[in-house]
Length: 106
Image 1: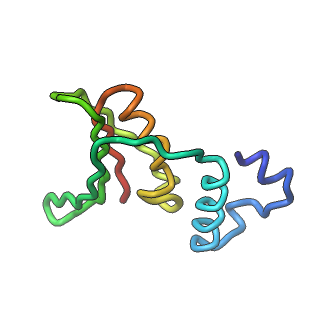
Image 2 (image 1 turned 90 degrees about the vertical axis):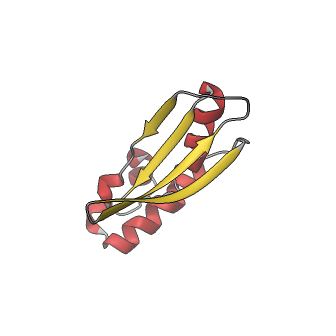
């Protein structure tokens, strides 16, 4: 993806402000993401522990559980990306692996 952006003449991500880099990442991912697969349920939660919290999205496949779980970590350097940027990937994991997929974000 970085090579394609460079070939297209896009500025290097490290030369952009954090806001501009986030927007560039969102736009690039949208071009490549594909069609979201159907899952039974998608839930957004905020988990707090000892005064810190993290946003998570839980993807539940169709069918009768209990299901195994997979945690998908893609932090974008904990600067880029958000809960929506990898939605298509996490839906595919949940559906194709028949597991609960959990996506984290700072």
